[in-house]
Length: 186
Image 1: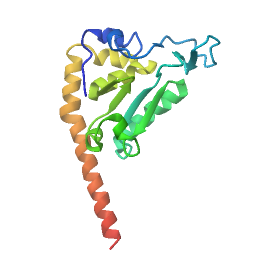
Image 2 (image 1 turned 45 degrees about the vertical axis):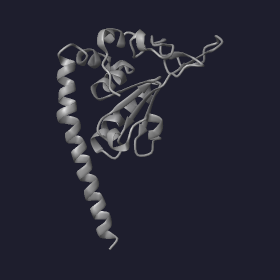
Image 3 (image 1 turned 180 degrees about the vertical axis):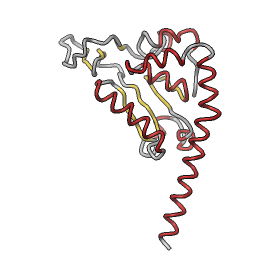
């Protein structure tokens, strides 16, 4: 379910979080002076600083593992920023989310971050790029990580070093917690 951005990567950080060819909803992403009141035009409303059409999905959804202290800490930071800025980003803990809706197993979801916008789902570095594109404070980071060479290096580092190490640590933690829980029940 992981795809790459290809030629549209520059549009990712100037448009609505997706290249025009992949956009599944209409969302004007220009910062609208930070205003949050409803817009009087029919069929439109504001979600945070973004003008959305009532029939469109304006949310970016992030699937993460709240039982992982590293994941939880990082997502907690993003969540606080999104709330403070009124950004249309929803964070879902894989341990309580409807994973059928996500189309992913619990084990696969625990292995990396996943982000959905409209009908597009991305994982790993591509997921982070999608998330950072929706967060004005992190767009600069997304632009750097999306550069040719940097993106490939970041994806290799995340996919083959960081994510597997965090996942192994998470599984070891769960085994210890389960062992402690079963020992205390005896």
